[in-house]
Amino acid sequence: MQVVPVHLTLMTGGGGTPSEGQVHVLVDALWAHAAPEVALEHVRAWAGTSRVEVVLFVRATGTDTAYVKAQRLLAAVLASGGTGVHGYSATLTADG
Image: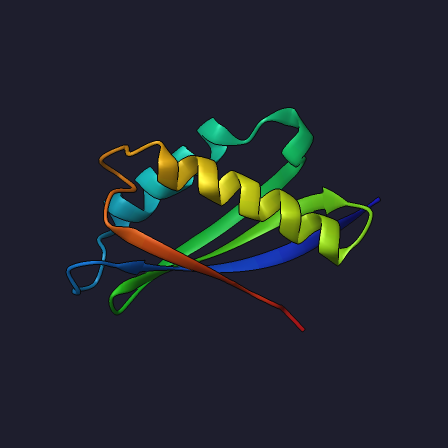
């Protein structure tokens, strides 16, 4: 097993730069939905213009497995409909 970084970009629906508080709520939602099988090790997140950039560090046997785990986690978070995640759309991108 290795720890694989998975980069997510969460775009806001209404534009504008998310506040630090909104970033923290998103991180809390990721942790709250991270079941043990996700093997989430660490989360880094910061606000950008009309988006939140997130890197999930996932313990997995390889990059493909890490991306599947991250996609499932992200789907659960966005489907939760929580106020902190409402209005975001997301993409996963390969890191290096």
